[in-house]
Image (cartoon, rainbow, N blue to C red):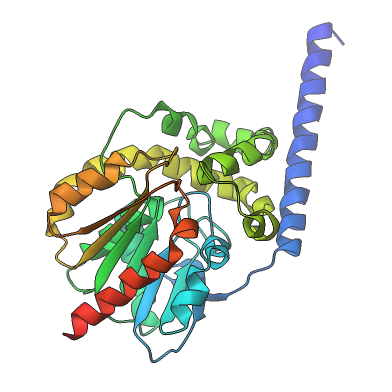
Length: 316
């Protein structure tokens, strides 16, 4: 065996070990962090969700951001606070947590919105308030475009609404590339992601510290599974095109809108919120001082008040 052949055999062996290791890691992560909610099958997609509060009360629906899952809203306190007076439904979006993300579909904000509208109808949810954080804000806006599904209002937090030059989003989209991306996701991507995860968490919450309950309670190991890394990479690749595609339609949303954004957000610039507010005209803008991208943890009380104000407005 030549030196070159020996090197190739060693590389192949290392890659095989990484693949096996990541498959085992995913299995262990799911055993330690089993589903916390229920499942509903819609259009051939199995969605994981929680349903809290009074089933007869007005409903608020929550959509998390890229790379996250249901537990994010639970740890922020939003689910418990809202469930005191409302029915609260929170989904794992496709590919995150325990929701499926079939590869044959292009999971734009609009396609996700259409799927969730059908799921909400199947759950008997009508005229909800819809709250979206980060990438979930685009999904929430897309639901606002649905003409056959009226909503009471939108609460948008830390959203990205207008295209800008963001090379970091494109750089994070590599694991979504077919074949090559698959190889990366099952070999080195989980290892690299594990190494940078603490840095990412600090950046998400900066300028504040990462909350202790998030450190202790968020199932970070689930975010390192190859299938969730694919979903996160796809949404990194889709974010700028989706903002470019939707920006001309924002004025078509007729319901009341509250916009939240942290002034210290290091992930998405606060100017995004101000620009959306100018385009919409009649929205309420809440710029939260000394808050980062995870504004839902810093000002959850005001966000709850915003949801409740939309309920009051609809009853007048």
